[in-house]
Amino acid sequence: MTSGTPWRSKILFDFFRVFAILNSSFLLKLPFNIVLNFNFFHLQLFLIISILCRKETYLNQEIKEIYHKERVINERLKIYYLNNSPKTNSFAEDVRIGLTAKKKFLLPKYFYDERGSQLFEHICMTDEYYPTKSEISILKTLSPTISERNNDKNLIVELGSGSSLKTNYILSSFLKTRDSLKYVPIDVSSILINSSQELIKKYDRLTITGIISFYKEGINFIIYKDPSPKLILFLGSSIGNFTKEEAIDFMKMLRKDLNQEDRLLIGFDLIKDNKILVNAYNDGGGFTAEFNLNILHRINNELGGNFNTDNFEHSAIFNEEESRIEMYLVAKKDIVVEIKDIGVEVKFEKGERIHTENSYKFTNDMINDLADSSGMEFSDFYTDDRKYFSLCAFRPK
Image 1 (cartoon, rainbow, N blue to C red):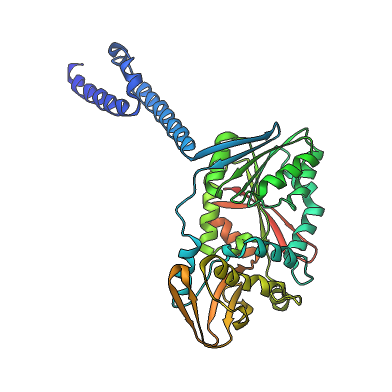
Image 2 (image 1 turned 120 degrees about the vertical axis):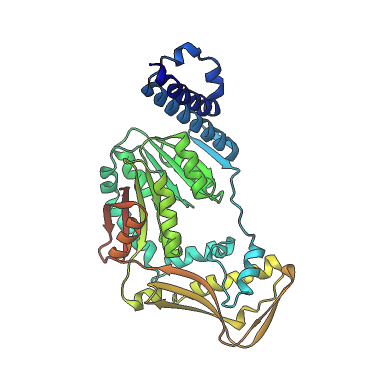
């Protein structure tokens, strides 16, 4: 028995050292004679409990750090503004980087100023632009099925909710079979406030918690506030604007916070006849061309540029090898453009292109590979009659 004492003392000393780091306040209250009678199970149990408590403390601190303010509009509508903006470049910095690169580019997120958003609404109504109409036809027909297959969920979270127009179909179907429903739109834009006010007027059993935030921080926040089973929506074909690596990273980020009961519903634009694809981005009314050129107007208005948009033309092509639509602005002649606010002079040769957007188109195998690479698997698959578009539900593996 005496031969085991130094060994046991060393174990106890190591335990105290670790435990003191994790939870010193508890250790000070613990009588030493009690600890001497601990067996190894007790030691392991206390360590685990302490680590979990410390993890919860860190989580609470993290949530408090990103929390900015709460605005209570009424008893069924709250808006949270998260003070959690990741470090990102400004419009000026991104324009400088893109237009001084060897292959010039501009980021598509800058399409959406007020005029750009209005033009995109016109695009969605054109005969050629099938994605919005195809997705709406799925939601009109299959929202009751989506509701039935998620009958254990009373919480819907939507990423990039915008005006929430398409979400109406899902909310309506869910509320037909539930006494109440919680909806959490997450968007960087305050447009969700107006759309949320309209929704609570329309649905008297709906409670909304709007989060003005980037996706990752917004998801973390709502999971902390409400860990109940949820359906996360990422509608439209926004996943197609990511590179393959970005799409995997995005889904991995969501996978990290999903429980086994949760589902993720994402819209995918499917591969189809090349002519249909290209025409969708070259509508006869010229709205897509205006939309593309509008980014040059924005540079002029906000950064002191002197782009003459008559010197550029819109181009959209389908890159079969990359399985994506590529949009460009093409210089019609040799020109020099000055952007005063960033002190840059940009030279263009005739035919030189500015790459403004990619929109990936998917096969079922591509979607399956994306899910597999992200630690997810198919749960359900919904498509329109023409198989132009799909809504895919995923669950954690």
